Amino acid sequence: METDTLTFMNPATGVKFGEVKMTTTAAVQNAVDEMRQSFAIWSAKPVKERIRILRKFQTLLIDKRDEITNVLNQDCGKSRQDGLIELFVTVDMLAQYCSQAPKWLKRKRVSSGLYLFKQCFVEYRPHGVVAVIAPWNYPLTLSLPPVLAALLAGNTVVLKPSEVTAATGVLIERLIQSVPELAPFVRVVHGGGQVGAALTQAKPDYIFVTGSTPTGKKILQAASEHLIPVALELGGKDAMIVLDDADIDAAARWGVWGAFFNTGQTCMAVERVYVIESKYEEFVQRSISYAKEFKTGYATDSDSPYSMGPVTDPRQVKVIESHLEDALAKGARVLTGGKDQGMFYNPMVMVDVNHSMRLMQEETFGPIMPIMKVKDEAEAIHLANDSAFGLGASVWSQNITHAKKVADQVQAASVIVNDSIAQFGIPMLPFGGIKDSGFGRTHGQEGLMQFTRPFGYAVGGAPIKWDIATILRENGHYDLATAIMGVVYGKNGKRYHSCSVENLTPNQKTPASNRI
Ligand code: NAD
Figure 1 (cartoon, rainbow, N blue to C red):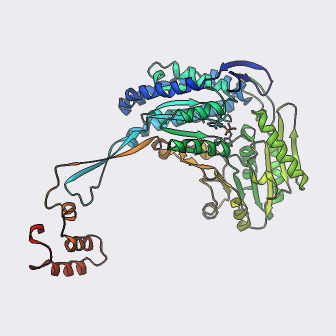
Figure 2 (figure 1 turned 45 degrees about the vertical axis):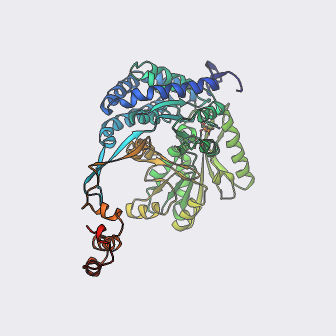
Figure 3 (figure 1 turned 180 degrees about the vertical axis):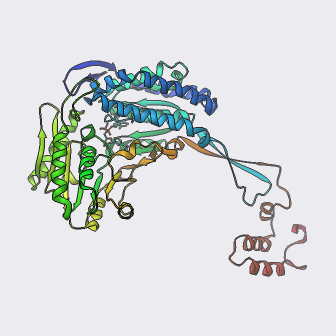
């Protein structure tokens, strides 16, 4: 592995504030083996017992809020309030999952179909050891909710946080270890892509990945060797469509928020805006004034005056700069904002952009809001769909029917009307992607149930003679089976029935020994 320690570096100040030893390949394997051993104990606990333990963890998260927002503040450069948003979403998610899990995970009785004398059930069983591989942009809320959902479903977990925000990974490890009833069922491994790759090779039973599309493809390929199921929550290039009947001031205000919250380092950030031409000028002007209110800077107080911190990962600066350079060379203009000092930018509103630019095609993951004029909604929808990605999108209109009609035509896994980004913060809404944004879902019932495998259970006495299914299984019942199929499923049951009854009169072809 590259080096054996990960340094904690505050991207706002450049000051080192700690380090952690990277987990070796052997220790990664040990972590998975250990979790496989402890799986039997955790999965045997009734759901209510798991909830009781996880609620202790929920209380701990609330009690430790200041420590958590302090670490997020240093690790990412984000304000303490933005860190609290991460914590809030995590706690909300856990609370709602704890209240729904008993209902969702309960064994369900299903129809036994033709097997009239059997009872059939579906049980939702855990996979075993779940690996959670997390990114750096929301290191708490993209790590803990999948870990907690997997635990609720009865799995044990190995988490690999991002190497870029390793301090948050260490904090999560410490928090989990401080709840003795939870500690034996989660392991945290530290390191970069190589540690992540070692985790895949250690053969967990399910892998939940949040990260970039290239990383997702690599993990999927590696997992396919062992046929490990994978959920991929990948990158995005979310479109915002502003229709002519939108509240333009609200669209500009919340569009700016969606573009620059967390310095644009949000998978479902507003990465491109399409505005109908009659409202374009007004939208651009209002966006500029709201972007100017979005102050850049860093403070450690809980009430920071700054809305936008630095870019967290130095590697991302290169991506932002290359998209900017390419767009400017092709005629785009920056109307406000630009590079500040260090890793800081002022929010950039850009116009005269088009789809030949990387800025409109690739994930920028930075503080740029490119706005494009379109002649009508058909063009807006066409451009929104002209993308390899399909994570989220937003549509703005004061006419909800109109908005829904447009939303239905956008290729995305979720669409929010008259707001931006907020759908991720709604615990009961499944979130995920289509196209290059991956597959699998987090949040909602689907987000919890992915950590289970449905187990089919059919029970009853030995097959009895009059059971339709027994009749079907015995030789010589072709005609009778046809009759049954016609009566039960055919469009005109009677017709099938009468023709078959004829076939069943004495002297029919069926041997006497097989008659019922
Ligand atoms: P990344 O792909 O660089 O890394 C994600 C994680 O994968 C990290 O923990 C990394 O160490 C690990 N990793 C890298 N190579 C690996 C390998 N070969 N095997 C196993 N693990 C490996 O992503 P990032 O830069 O940390 O995060 C930003 C990306 O995540 C953006 O593309 C963003 O859109 C995406 N993201 C998606 C969602 C979503 O819900 N869809 C949410 C947040 C972020």
